[in-house]
Length: 288
Image (cartoon, rainbow, N blue to C red; front, side):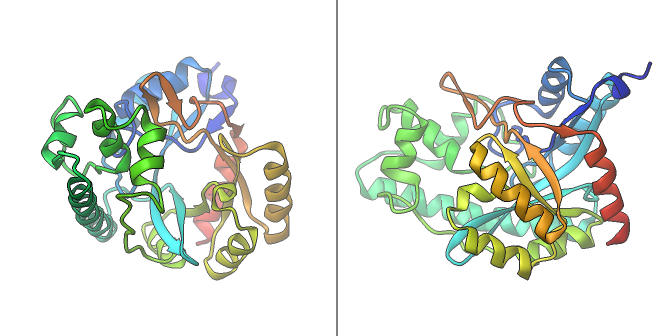
């Protein structure tokens, strides 16, 4: 029997070294295979640089890999993340749009480093990149978790969460807001690249009124009901919201790998939906 028919679960949210994950894309796929999953989505922040390697690993293992992305946006003063599934990861217009988002992120990173230096912390972006322990590849995205790792390494924070709480989180000493597009624009980009837009982890925004506003303003096709940072009451609320707005129900671990002995946000496969959800996404894609 084909292994993909035996394996019934999908984890539709994972990150790799292409953004702020710790593993190579092929390593994520291997882990998903070992956990018995039937499908894994690669959804790095503002880049699709890890998709090709993941697809090749999926072919070797006879396992479904969904090409995806997670685009950083803002609405109502809150960071909102938009997942895109089955995007054409070679579309030149889409690639240039993502590149512009990464350039904006690089400018923000430079301002964070400046603020840290003003606080008396001797840290450079070269040191942050050196902390990766490897060469930075084209189209990879450097983010705050990498800066946090460098702060821990240099003894300015106890661990990743401490680095965010003291320096990098909103309201912290070295926080710098980043100009972002609206979720509606991200949904349009994803649809124009042949993909399906899904609202990521709504429970993290702390404002269901805003979640409803965003759903109504942007043409989402799905909502991530099951996420590593959602509790059971969150899942019930967003299941009801999915039914109300006719949205596809998705699930994702938001796996980033292991940092300083801790897995962020959840381990691969810790949140799953049935393989049939892939059919729903493909149908939504065909209708777009």
